[in-house]
Length: 185
Image (cartoon, rainbow, N blue to C red; front, side, top):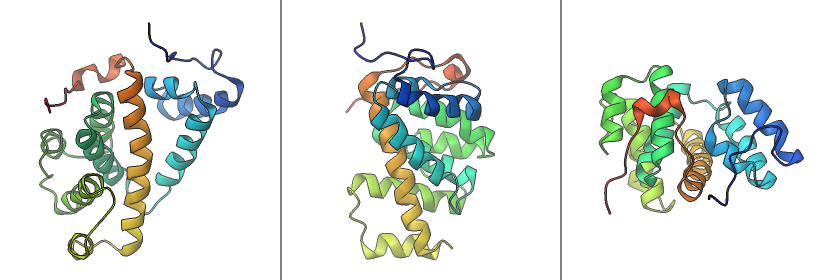
């Protein structure tokens, strides 16, 4: 038996319920990772606050999904890869770009490739971007503010990726066709 319940709005601790209600409205379901996060009101509410701000940034939804999918692959989060594959396709990320990211490659779209490379570099270097890492991103047409926004997206996705890796949520039926398995270390 899992030590982390997959909460419903009714079963969640009272301080977690508004977050689950908000996610239900946003996605038409409560993502299983969030349902597990709800065990900790601190975690679910901190995640949701950051999640809201990320989606209000200057980045488009397709750009955000590119970063989220890249992070999920880089962190080996199987649930998150399936979830963000579905959302990325829904937000207009081309299938070839999604497939490239799922296989650890950069998307063919230059802007999405710059975002994916920066996100992956942030994770792999534990935030220690070199001047050349930053310059490469800026030369792709992004601004310094957007480097900081990518950090916010990486932070939000790290919460979800780590939660999914620790709590091992079931993959919801709408995302099963996008199941992914992390390569062996």
